[in-house]
Image 1 (cartoon, rainbow, N blue to C red):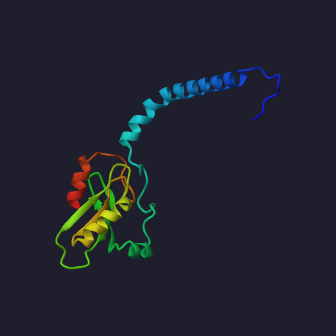
Image 2: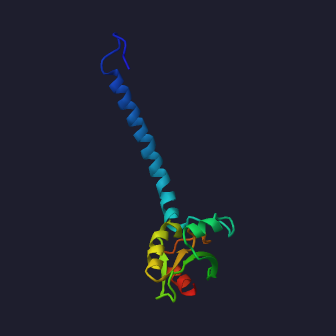
Image 3: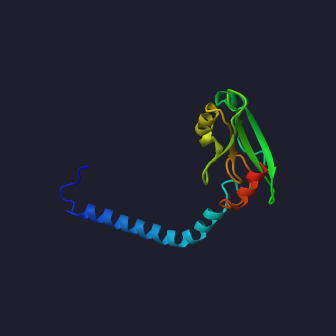
Length: 156
């Protein structure tokens, strides 16, 4: 952008400096006021907070075949009550050498673990990919960081 000849030198720099300082002030004050309320809820609330069963997009039968998923299952667990969504990948050679529960990370879903599940199935193991409580296609309001999840897995 070409400035007029009579435009004061340094005026553009001063305007940008003032604009950046004001933006920093707005975001700094806003963040200081907002973060104390947001951070605890982000740690405790599950991604599916207050969502009921049946509202989650699940894989369609055609996608299951492409991904080589043998079964799609829902298991009721609790207390507190929740509905967990599972995908089961059977090995091509039977009988299976064992069953491996494949778990995802916090705020993730079983869909991200399909590759690992397929590797296990190709190696002769039955892999069970689980959407943990409150994640993916499973119900649940709270993140318990393994406390309740361990009971859920024993019920699965």
